[in-house]
Length: 403
Image (spheres, rainbow, N blue to C red):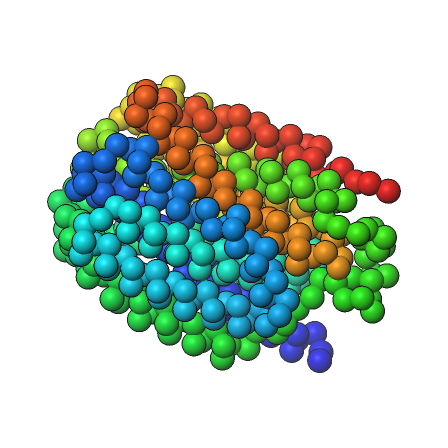
């Protein structure tokens, strides 16, 4: 296969995987609609409604490793297709939950949706990382990030459009109707996953017969011997938590401080993220290394999180966009920095990183209870130590190696 044919094949794969990343963002963005609706409709405290994020992200711990074993058994494409079948079941459960106006059922539906997301993320993230050269992985991940983050604000807008009401006017029993459409779309995506021309890919040294291609991993016996991976997983844990806050709380924050048409503010963090991804596409790796991008974004995130709690409340919501800009290149940089030189442990390493996505469960729940104890604006202080930890990984953590 010549270079032109290979480039065309990779381009087709990138286009389809971009659709899958959009689906991931859409599924996660549903919670940003449900949180304020269920809070008002069922008269729940904020800390309780934010358990929806916990239910969505908890499966990443439980199913991260089984997902990697599934990939090893049936391959990336079939695992992607399986995830969409699970999504369809989850969305059917959302219909049952809405009709019953039962919060516990919503939690279960979110858990099933999170399980589907765990399998899909375990497939697409390592796939896009090793689809081309590792040094340009952040560039490919930035392209995927645009697809993913644009979907977050589209989810609440789509739900509001189909229901025909603004968030503040929506009843819990109104929620079911859009999910019939969503189920059909995700079933089609599952079928397309099986038919799409996606090549099965492997990292250097992943097979026993080419282990020499990754000398660093050749004599290792487990993933626990890769400190840059372990520190990277912990860093990814806190990163996903604060990115979930940036993307998932803008609508609730706008509603809490009394801004009209709160669902429109879902675009504020997405614009910040997309701007960052565009910079990643342009500058990485030619002008900016993945580690330097991580450091720069950490500083932006620190400034943005301080601005949210220090600015007047009416204008502070725009600082959520600045915090989101700081989050933009963290995901594209953290994955390749943590997965470099894993060789035959690539799938196990990626499963550990998928499990770290559970940070999206823990930090938003803490945020929700801080909101109940103080104010929503003050609750954003939780982001500051998280960005500081990410900065440490960008400066030092990714360089850790054992002989």
